[in-house]
Length: 200
Image (cartoon, rainbow, N blue to C red; front, side, top):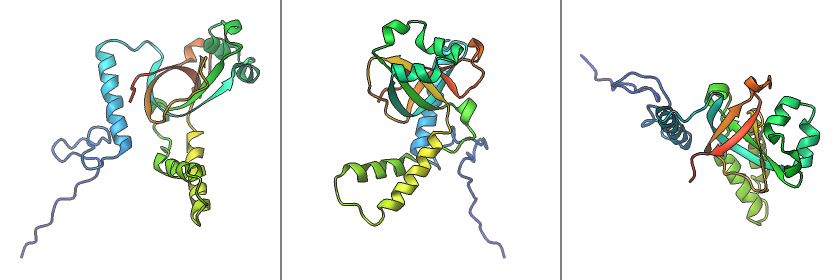
């Protein structure tokens, strides 16, 4: 007597090609992160074809950004001379009244092993805070969950740019950053933010 057992399909394996890839095989494991990874791969491929990526430039996903007064940045990093000069482009006098934007970025080549933050948890708690409604019994629990996800973000490298605007970037935007290792910055946790390349 024989039994027909349905084939087991592992989430990230295409049964036809047998290639294990969360980027390529996203039809069984569809999520917002999968979609971002597919877009990221598509942009990488196009830039490679157009030979648009300079040495040291990396594509990544902007997770969180904040701005600080230029003077605050100067006090924090002026002793890290190589890094400081790369971010300010040696034009400090023009930037004193401006801002520096700090962006936490997921760069797959560097941070592929880090846990990715769950933005649905963060977004849910932000909505609770901004709604103006009375806190529910689950508010504290959601707050703790949100703090856990925010801590994940702080594990990622930070990239900086001088700007005249105090605004930030939306999370999960694909961006171009630059490693400053060849410029004498020994840590991959600090770099230069270049631009958002995937506008909504």
